[in-house]
Amino acid sequence: MTELVANARPRRAAPGRRAGTRWAPRPASLVAAASSITLLTGLALAFYWVPSDADQGFSQRIFYLHVPIALTSYACFGAGAWKAFRLLQSGDDRHDLESYTAVHIGIIFALLTLVTGSIWAKISWGIWWNWGEDQLVLFLVVFLFYCTYFMLRFSVDAGLRRGRISAVYALFGAVLIPVSFLAIRLAPRYIHPVVFTTGGPRMAHSMLLVFCVMLAGLLGLAGSLYRTELGGRRIDRRLRELRSDA
Amino acid sequence: MSTSEKYVTAAYLVFLAVLLLYVVIYSTKIARLEREVALHGEPEDGRES
Image (cartoon, rainbow over all chains, first blue to last red; front, side, top):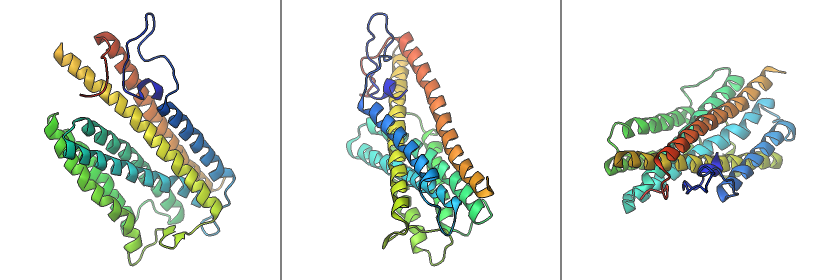
């Protein structure tokens, strides 16, 4: 799938051959393959290699999935905000679709963060959710804020005005990311674990290695999904233009 | 398999299931777009102007 739309450039087909079905190694395909291998390696290391945490036991292994997914969602929202800024700066409509796609990928990862975090809470705390925990509630606020982005976007007619309104909203969302990240570190009391502190990561080197492998794999995966989805959206938009011209 | 192991496995399976669902949905969409491209004639370039 990735190689078909990686560059979002449907090309003229050779006689007897459908457009875009010719396989050729492209950077996007290589990134997708590398991130898949990295993720599979990370999963294997998380389950079979890294030792169990002395305090939390086996349940700590969710950390290798949950935290990198959360950081990936922040990265996607950050990328969405950057593209939104570029749209407002340059007025280039191309950045609107890029910002929208980045936010869409970010919302998928944010949803996964909430689900995997709830599963961990059930194991460790015996409850699926704790409304008294700032980190959880603030992440939910970020998630709902970006859910509202889609409601706002689809309530405005397509065009540059919609792009600008969406861009301003996405930029406001970027402000919430450091707030969400720092909430746990600034809270006077909390029960949510804090691994990364100003004194460095509080875990064994082997755990940090697995964490980094998973983070690299997930960032690569998010990048591949972004390229694929963006390619599809560009073709979709071009087809709409062709239909309206016809 | 302990309760803790079941929950951890479930968390990883949820991730894989969502990823698979996304790939299936997007593969379907890409296939539809390819059919429509073939129907309308191929654009020179998919990039937006």
